[in-house]
Image 1: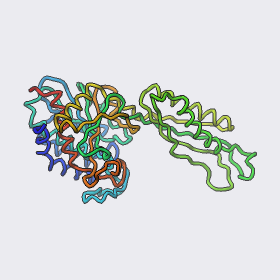
Image 2: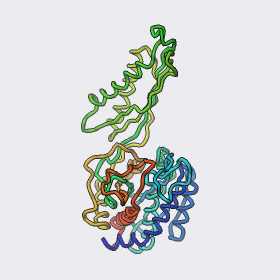
Image 3: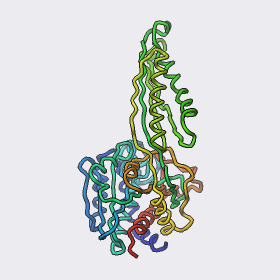
Image 4: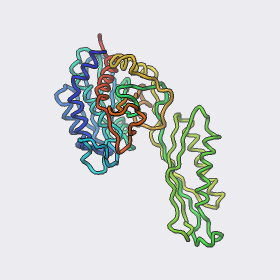
Length: 393
């Protein structure tokens, strides 16, 4: 335990410096040239086989240690469209862009692990693939990298995701569903507009829109198996322009979250039926667009055991906890886990000035801060996962 944590601590200054440099210059989407340049600079001199993406600014770096399995470690690199108000001295210098989901920490942890593992290659048998991915926040970056071959020859995949709602350095994981799928729906109802004083001469789409919302809630309560839950949230409704005009159209949209493909398909089917039939009952037409997003993140049992063992080995017996339930958030790491066994775990970065993680600003907040001690723990766990799978001693 002491050996792995000490090795991670030995690169701590480098990891924090990298994290802050990336944090100052956040980038959104699939094209992250400044971030890519920082990562490539940090990887230089480590004796890795490095390639960059063609459809995105992705990076794949292989540490080849002879015969054996290939273990992939992944970090996402993109930021979010937020104006930072964290008060940190190294806050974002880019207006309207912020690393509010800790991807800067993910990159720094993986770069630290690459440095430690490159120095210990004589202790390994196999290959470590370091995957630096753009476009996790809704841009399907993992899918692009899979198309370019990042999973070729890979046996298992692992990822750590920082979270402020766990004590610093605590690792949480679970077997099976970890995170949900994330789909979108967009519904346009069309009637016949006219004067607000004469609704009988119009076909008003607003009552149809209002009827769809409670019908969705009833569908979730009555059609969906309690033990395979789903969330459908209508998050945006728009119709009309002023007080004396009945509009021609009404628009609704929102999100769908599920943990398995059967429930996902059922929700899609029932949502389309509800929207269409409700529109017809109000003499409106309905156009519904169901957009499939990230699938559910499903952790493999053996990979979770590896994550638990690595945490106990690197951080101590009391630093791992089994999550009792999955979360309705989504991750495009799910694309990798749909094709290879693996696991994603959460690692705590609750700020040092807070005793209660529930008081911390959550991920995706413009005031989110992290305790950088958690990055040292993340480096140690990443190294521990590799040593457990590829260690030859």
